[in-house]
Image (cartoon, rainbow, N blue to C red; front, side, top):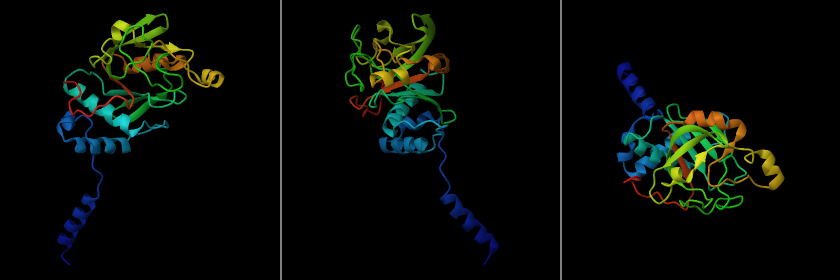
Length: 234
């Protein structure tokens, strides 16, 4: 057999089974069909470096990724950092993830509180209204750090009209809370609750805030919020 022909046939065979690499920085991903995007999101999800943490759910990851790319294309983000809060999960589980999309690595997975009028163990009622003491869903960009009654805190800007765009005026921020702890869960059978803020464990709050501050994407997921539209921010 001609060895040149054998070489090229073998090379073609090997390449046909090689894994497809996906460029995370390719914001043109959002211009593809819905099915194509879902396939790419699933591919990225399969390649996530869990870094000894649990993985988020594929559905919340996929919706968060779609919004991230659209915000990136609009020039509204300054970091390849994606924070996902999954309020479909029990507050007794670690339902906050911080993912570095430049390396496709999970940097953090920890507890996060919802508002006291949003639910007990599970979050099921949401609001954009002042003094509601409820959490708001959807996409946010992180703002600036300030020192308040909870110490170092991070301002948040809601990007969805009627859903979370009153976040800043409501004082919805990320901050530390002693009631976000395994001790509280052990004593009360659920995590503590906030006045609507995504409060995080006191021992991790400064690290989290420094990691995601200044124009990174934060997405609070719940299945009651439908993101079927291709353009999420039109």
